[in-house]
Image (tube, rainbow, N blue to C red):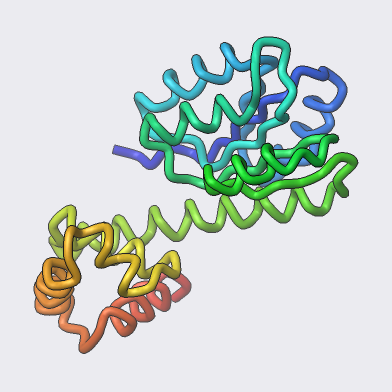
Length: 200
């Protein structure tokens, strides 16, 4: 099965802004535009069949709701990827909600470089994740072992990885089994070797 191509969902009701964002982003990844919250939810559901979006870029003020509601829906449906929320307002409640939903926040008017930088980082993250998944498959890692390897490659700490796998003891057992299969002396060594092989 071929990997799903990176794709960013841009949720913006202003046609000119949406097109400008599309032109900025399409050099790095494919783009899906949604003009309102309903279209955004439909796009999230449709693309989830074959994968998930590489990143979400969401305006807050939409004709039928809030971009934050769209992001909350995406998170509750299992989307764990990067999200960028932007708005012309400085409401503390919106800022706090965006951070709670693990989103970056840009205040309008934001420089084009900030959007491009976000997209490039998201695409690179997706590329690394895809490589680590294939490397893990080559070493016949279990889903839990694979998840730990990917999390470590994305910079999660041992305590964060342990929190995702019930207990630190459970995570430790998975890491022990992972290293027995890859032949590395530590999780860091496994990640470093995998990334080195990606560029060789």
